[in-house]
Amino acid sequence: MMQTEDRSLKDLLGDLSGNITTLFRKEIQLARAETSEKISQVGYAIGSIAGGAILALAALIVLLQALVIGLTAAGIPAGWSSLIVGVVVAAIAYGLIHKGTSDLKASNLAPNRTMDSIKRDAHVAKEQM
Image (cartoon, rainbow, N blue to C red; front, side, top):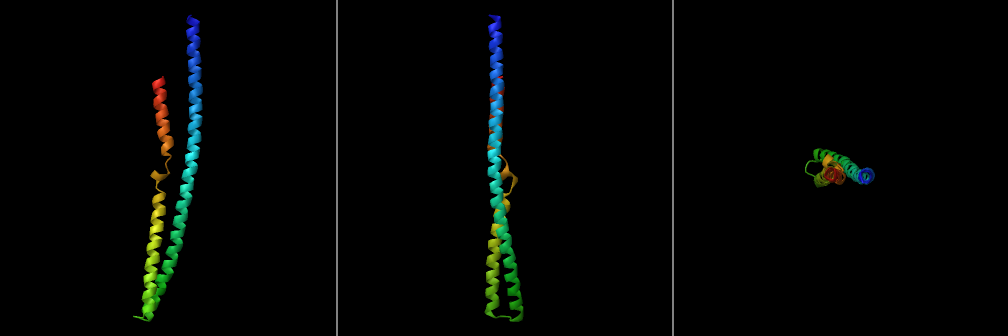
């Protein structure tokens, strides 16, 4: 009878070991999937930053054109219209760059679901022991 109990304990430990191995494999798969998702977010954020940078360059050109027109023909409406367009484009560029940089914050890129799942799994494993 003592050998049966020892064998059952060995079987239980073997099952526990197999389950922990499977659990960690699944956690690695989840981490890979979540990392891939975060990489996509980085791609979109970089696109926003690039779009904002292009618009910022266009705004700079328009604003410089407005300054030149404003200085050479003080008071002529064409200069002021260039200034208005330049300010609007600069505001849009700022919005895009701000959105892109906020999307790249470390807190947005951390694999939160994987970390939570690992914490839960560790807690369950401790309870099982």
